[in-house]
Length: 115
Length: 115
Image (tube, rainbow over the protein chains, first blue to last red):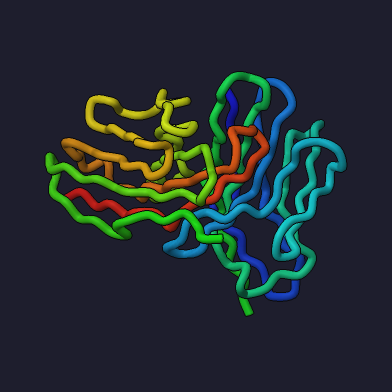
């Protein structure tokens, strides 16, 4: 069965510093990987996805993520954090061409950017 | 484009009562999902519709939960009778296709508290 692990419940970073939110996955086969962000009392918003091709994918709000097949990771990164980036971040995985397997989410990582 | 609309935003009920949630997806989106997000966890898929047909309801507690999507547009999710452990945010999402790489667009959710 597919699964996603986000090993950090909370990440704190100073404004202007680079940030990384970690994600590792476990699937049989090649995954489709996604990052979503959730602001307070709001639904999840799509940030970026990896389907195939270049391992470094760029998404909304200056975020990017790097797919690393050997380490089964898909860490979310941003070169310079903003206070407005403070939110809950979810990594998700889906296995293509395997029937109707659902999108499986990690438990989330709360990012706090301190001014 | 208008986003996914959900109502109500908040609902408080006593255990053993019934409750219903409503969702209107983005216009033209064929696929509709209901997710349950318990505090501190990632969203978990309850049911997926493709137009007005059920694609996946394997994680829906069918003894108490039901959902329908008449006419392939709006959807309702019902819980009867509610239990304390049903306290969660119920998220509706839609996507343009059933494609496995299609991002999901989420509504703001309905926060259910069962007392």
